[in-house]
Image (cartoon, rainbow, N blue to C red; front, side):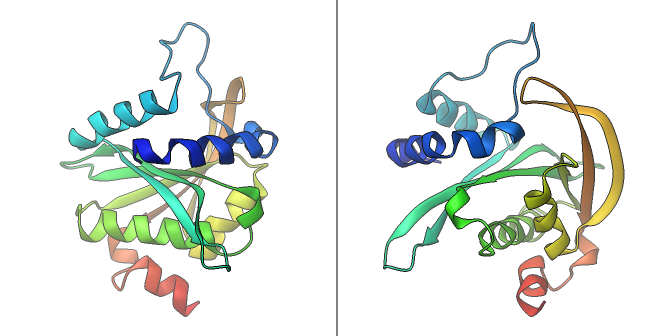
Amino acid sequence: MRQRDRAAWEEVRRRNHAWLQPWEATLPPGSQSGPATYSGLVRMFARQAREGRVLPWLVHYDSGDGRRVLAGQLTVSGIVGGSASWGQIGYWLDQRWAGRGVMPTAVALATDYCFQVMRLHRIEVAIRPENTKSLRVVEKLRFRPEGMRPRYLHIDGDWRDHLVFALNSEEVPEGLLRRWELG
């Protein structure tokens, strides 16, 4: 994520507010507030990236008319090294690009980067059970279901249950993108 992407990011978020709101992380009462602006978000992510705790990426897509457009965001967070060696992927996508394989491709690329470059061992994705679009992403990529985490994350104003899916690096020795492309 870069400061120069602010206008495109804000426009996509504004246009997709109703589409994204049910799945948006929120802060529980009494929490310290997070960044209030895109610029603040970029600065926070940049600091956390330098510390090796997060990988914040924007997802771009060829719209078919020769333009590359901002299609969403993918963040690898909670990165832990050492004996744990894992991270968690979260994402959102512009509604107009849903169902075109954009997010499964982005998740596959991010997972491969985490396994092959960062040498992480495990990637998790936590999804609300009602979020059928996101569930389809992990299904397409054949992430392993690991069960329910009750009241796991604060989403859309309350603590929400999440289903957790994971992959370990040895499950995709040829890379997740290759497995996704081969079907």
